[in-house]
Image 1: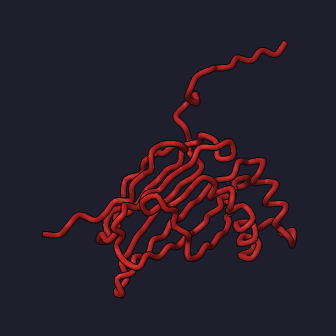
Image 2: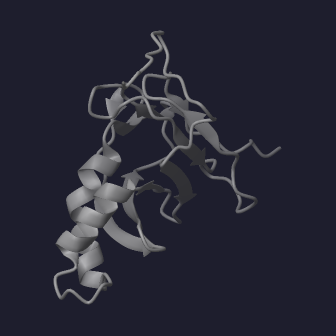
Image 3: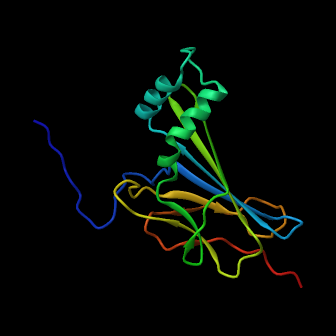
Length: 181
């Protein structure tokens, strides 16, 4: 006899602390022209079954490894899933990336990590606050995402702290550098 128990609540329940498989890292710099360049690197570890399937599907020459071209193809194919629900906003308006690059990397025997780099450009420091939003829908699920955003206009220094953000949480503001006196 197979017995299953179901926990009914308004929030997801984990036996252990959640292990986010998606990470968003943001960096910002001000070009000599005054243009603000923002980079978002979103990476995700694929589940073992999906990793095996995608690895077999994109290993075109069947050598057991992903060449650079195969990795870029796999990354481009999976990028919409990795980016699902993630948006960078200035005020209420979503920003459109200037460019997007994707790739994949095999880690160990059964893991594949897909990384997508989104590059944004703003003509100057924004008057409206920048924020990262994670929408909650059936496709993106409720899995938390690790987010780390370096201050806009800040000096290079230690990496910013990482926070866990769940889809549907309030927008995560992109921090501004402390004002110099």
